[in-house]
Image 1 (tube, one colour):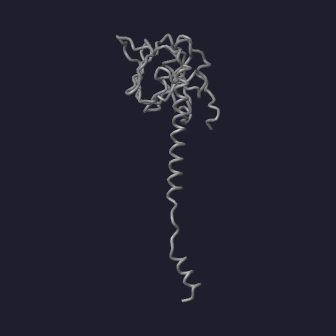
Image 2: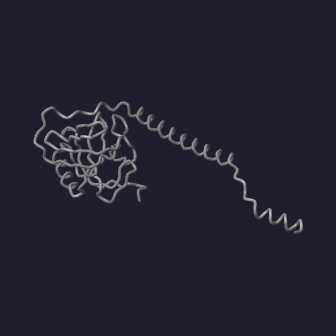
Image 3: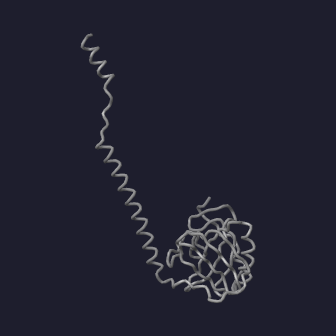
Length: 197
């Protein structure tokens, strides 16, 4: 066999050597980047909570409750500043998504959240309810969210809920609007979720 053919055969048999140091460097760099992004998100969350530090403690449900008008099982998605579907409120535990059990009585709306802070919206604080499709970056089909608008500590808040049975939503809108002392037709109008399409 000629030297040229021997060299060619050897070149065909040798496999490319993996540069493990470069691969490990890329993996470590990627992990550091992910950790940095997570840390920045956490800092943003803390900064938002600090900005919203003036929001008082959430009301607790009264010791004696009236006869329930409506009940609903579903999910609590988020609360935002009223009319600002992306301005999430994280203070007082309102930023935590969770399961929720809602009970409407003549006294107001009781929200029980396993694994998160429960709260109560007194009837006097209710400002209305509507069906919508988005809140705090969460977008669902048209009418897929029940939005209850209420006032707390001088701030009007939109809280978004989704029932396990979406057919429950219209009854809730009607009942909350009937109970709300300052309900106006403007609170039932659909809020355009800009950028959600």
